[in-house]
Image (cartoon, rainbow, N blue to C red; front, top):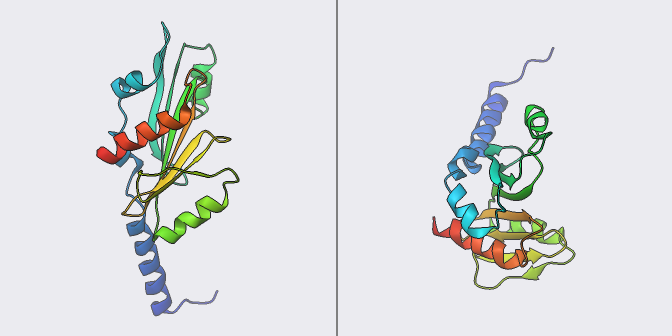
Length: 168
């Protein structure tokens, strides 16, 4: 087995530290952005609907997922399997970019990007994805995705949620 030289190990450790510094520490840092009361004020909860799932955790990036609706017999099995239950869903993904140029990769993946003026440093809406993507002045990229059949104007709702998060 070949032995690594100390400077290489130091450089790798320095790189690892740099990567850890660049990412937000924990998805839990974002868990206070959206409360159940806020969700109920923004979305239609039918009689008997409840917030069935609210979790912020680090997947590829810090991700907060909120699911609401009527209880379903398979909810417990889905939760046990590590999958969110079925229902209406709001998902927010946070990614710390190094510069505004990193947002260009996001834009290149949208075929139907529609600019949203007056929100963060730059923002786009995708009707096909029901998703708002934006980058803030401090290079935080956020994707807000709504999967809720009762929401008539998902774009306006996403913008409202983004403004709520930006004000926090």
